Length: 281
Image (cartoon, rainbow, N blue to C red; front, side, top):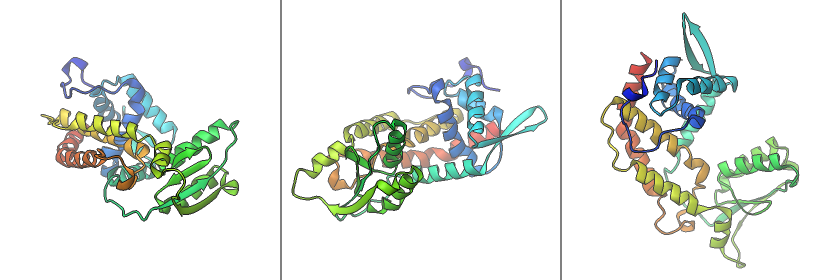
């Protein structure tokens, strides 16, 4: 059972996760600790770990139920206890997410100046479809400088874009081409309209400030801090289009944040996973 709130260690000077984030934090726990071990986990271990973040038992159990209802988890009763295993779709989802998280920011690609441009029109009346298109193409690293125009310096993303368009029923009316930027207007201005890089950089700076110099002292603290490190980092593949250095502002903080993430993850992961195994019993 979860520890009493007064007995929990003071593990960080940072904000704690609110009840509204219980499901998102649960997915982080599943990806970081449950996926690699490939074995069911007791409800008590998940509830007790979520309690370290100020999440009440009721909210933790609701997050488990919602995640199972979406098909990512399956429950099994053993006597009076319940344990949870990842379903095949849940394992695929978390495996793809882990690869995206841990590969993100590693390795700089040489850019030859070629842009991939996708033109796709969605009527204003179909707002849900417009939102789904924006979400999916943004995840793939595209930006939109003008309505109906999507661009990326990653020309290898064309197949991914085509898959999104087919899935949304938009492929027949769309067009794509590759080109270098011409003499009209400013490439920098186009980038500024397509992506809000100032917001991304602010998030990187906040991440750096949050985790630099942090040295968790015990098992619960390192479990808490590693989980929050991964939880915060997993947002960046959604936020940062990973533009080539020549398209980024001077002194871009993404490289420092990447180094910090991998350094802290390597430093904390063994102790955090040891504490997780203790909670699993």
